[in-house]
Amino acid sequence: MIWQWALDEGSPNGIRARPIFFRAPSLLLFIPLAARDMESQQHAVARADEALLAELGYKQEFKRAFSPLEVFGIAFSIIGLLPSIASVLFYAVPNGGPASMVWGWAAASFFILCVGMSMAELGSAAPTSGGLYFWTHSLSSPRCRNLLAWIVGYSNTIGTIASVASIDWGCAVQVMAAVSIGSGQAFTATSAQTFGVYVAIVLSHAVICCLGTAVLARLQTVYVVLNVCLCLAVIIGLPAATPKANMNSASYALGNFTNLNGWTDGYAFILSFLAPSWTIGSFDSSVHISEESSNAATAVPWAIVSAIGIAGILGWAINVSLTFCMGTDLESLLNSPVGQPMAQIFFNSFGQKGTLALWSFVVLVQYMMGSSMVLASSRQTFAFSRDGALPFSSVLYRMNSFTKTPVNTVWFVAIISIILGMLSFAGPQAINAIFSLSVTALYIAYSIPIIARFVFTNDFKPGPFNLGIFSIPVAVIAVSYMCIMNITFFFPTTPQTDVANMNYTVVVLGGILFLSIVWYYFPVYGGVHWFTGPVSNIGKVTEENASSIRESVEKNIREDVKAVPVGA
Image 1 (cartoon, rainbow, N blue to C red):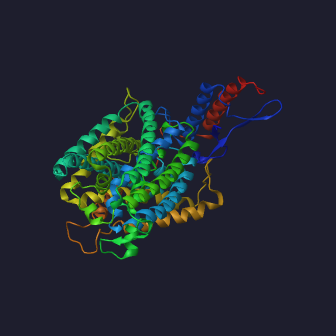
Image 2: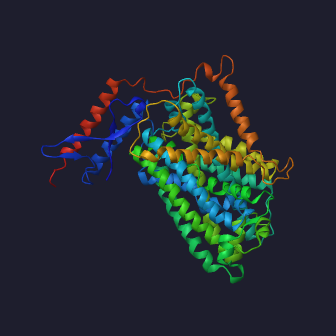
């Protein structure tokens, strides 16, 4: 059943959407319209989406070409699973080994699902590309809403760009790993070589994301299919191909705890959470394309929750498969000339040719993750510049007349990602900070609107996705988890460290947030003098205007329903 949504009477800020009912001669008709007149049905959905966006204060600028499956697809393709696990396996292996890979993943997945459900409630109530900072401004106290929205907007923007950088850097490392495997492990990539591949990947993603919305939407279905097939291939194929000498017992695979980094065992176990936190992350991507999705108030929240749930289950199965098949010499996996623990596991099991064949699909799916992340990041940047908060907003807030996509923000995201990638020349720990940054910055942006909903006095009206009495306990779990993880991910990899091995996440994130706040309070020109949060681009939506929009939507829907015989 497809739900249709209209504007709810007395709903300021467009915080609620409701199912439309109207009278037929002898019964009350709900308007799924079956599948008898699909074109009329899609028209009604589009009108309702446009009306809801109008009450939120924005005109329809994007083409709504993303179906609910494709909205799910962008969140799931960014999660990526197998290639994502490959990119951050070096966090889990030395911080507990098999036990952390299996049970650390399971524990973190539960907490991440709580984060996703809390965010899904907000996304269902107000589906707009600005998402997080829009919610923050709508739900916070007037005394601090501008500053909080500013902080959330910058955290979300840098978090999504850092996600682009970390995904594409992981892809570049995987390409170099393939070259190493193909050379019989005689080749070891330098930082400059890896950076060159990274730049090429980022630029190619920028070109892809300048395409029209319909093309980008159709690609998401392809990404989902490849993702799932690759996961199943490894879950089933890896145990079948692994020599008995490398197979581990159940007690080792599910219970061995190996701590190689020197922290206490409990803290090492928590540090391993970065792997699932980064892998099952950036699910706010569905929110950022809500203005391009059909039936957004329902499609967006379910895309978030289902992507996290499926990723948690499949990811756990992948980790179990790896722990049974990776042998017991964990240090050799971490110090392999291939430079990729998972690539070395595959090499030990499949051999050179089999690994290259499978690894090519890993690289392909990771590449697809990057293109989806550039898409989502560019939409967040577009939304934030629409409200004038970013430098050069007048340039960034432009829609290409040919593709109907924000081409300028796509290239802005690509350029900043390349700049972040230059940290690779400062050492491995500096570039690893980008992985932590993509989690910590987003967790700041996720936490504030969830807290604002319950801490401040506001008129929040839930959308079609609503947890009811479980909203508060789920939110408490979600915010507590994100706060603990942010503190944890600021610490270095080992307790004995030096300048080269420090965790520079706090420097990069702290520096960006510090500069953004300085700019906010800057005399005369600072945001405190002009930033008022989300700015309507269709003028003030009065109740009369909202009623006019609502009546227009319902009139179109009634006309559609008249064409469908009641008893047919």
